[in-house]
Length: 265
Image (cartoon, rainbow, N blue to C red):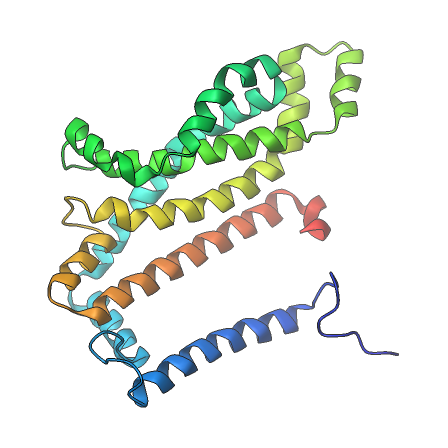
């Protein structure tokens, strides 16, 4: 039988190829990094070797209590993201289901979506002080308006014949939304949540470098004062690893909750 081309146009790849490719790209990345450090192409103070960064990461967890900072950061992301979902999911579904609701809320949501979340830092500090509230508020603002728009667009794509059939059979509008539209759009809602959770992690460091003494971002800012680049890179690696773990968690939830769509993703 003819062999399938490696770079087939929209041709699915098997799990072995996926695993091999993932390992290869990271091996290439760290190999180039190690080579650049060993050959002196980069300043060791500014770009320490990867083995030094991993040793520093271990030291942070084992001897300097970095685990508590990581747990605090995870808690902030989870709480703020849960608050955003609690508002965005029902509002997005309603906006996608009822054009009158969209006409009322969409101009407001669209305007706020283009405002950069970090620009709210001064006013949030004035309103809430230097506690947890401004950090949670910044993460909330950075996620909610994009999430509302994504869920609204997905809700609009629910097949019209499903809605029309339910109405023809005598279902009320609330029943159609609850029993037809929401179950139909729920898989796409989970996908949107998975996408926007990445946004929450990108805003985490910004939220924690402002008047904060705890969290991954605060540790990175302390390291910056003493030019400890290895600790800054360790923080970046930890955030990337946490983001990847949460992304894989959402992928598992998707496959578990919607097994009938497994062949489509």
